[in-house]
Image 1: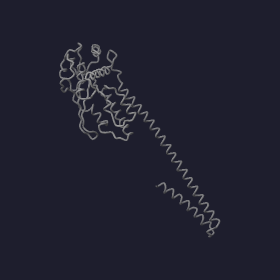
Image 2: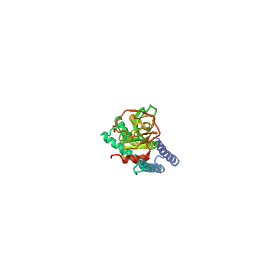
Image 3: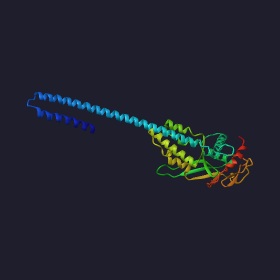
Image 4: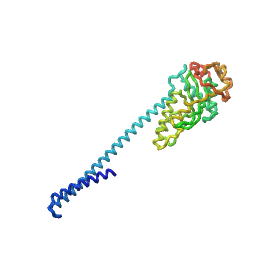
Length: 316
């Protein structure tokens, strides 16, 4: 509207200039030669003005379109680079088994994940029910690991609703690890982009992270989740925001362990394991379920140096 008004004023100004010229040159006759020339000049002036305005407007529109195309291409390029960077970071965290090897060349993480997979096959399910998590935790403890079932709970805040969650942790050499089965399900969203769907495919059935690694995974996935939802014109639900997801593993929690495994005992394979600052071992019974009690969250863990001796004697 404002552009049309400015254009109109410029046209009327051109008419005014020609009209003043006619008054100065006219001899008083309405049909004088000077008057006819003025009319012709006026017509040419208006035509020239309109043509010039059309060229200017067209050129400006083309320039804007070209600029928008270039900006869109640059934004798309940056987006692809960021997507690839995120994928590499997540892949590195998921596959990061290096650096925590026992004497046999196999890594602690890989061994524990294999144990969890064996437990799931023994239980005949890959569901995520509380009973299954308890069964996996019992299996790990019978294998000599200081594993626990952690129950977290958090209150409602301005950013997210209240909630609760259960997960398995394991203490190894004073480092706390968190074990998750089907972790990708915690990050599923509606109408994911192809890039986000490819991120979800990076997670294996069983994942094991220390606390620092898991925090990075959650932060990266929540950012990618938000971007995917934005591209689909959707809003992130409260239970898929970073604060809520972080609270599952890093909010207040109570750790539960099997009572019959708390007393020092001889290992099934003749090897005693150190867990939580006291010696515990394998029970002769391989029952997967047992009573649970609360356990103070400690800093102790399974000594990595004993792993090789234990796993060499296990029936695979």
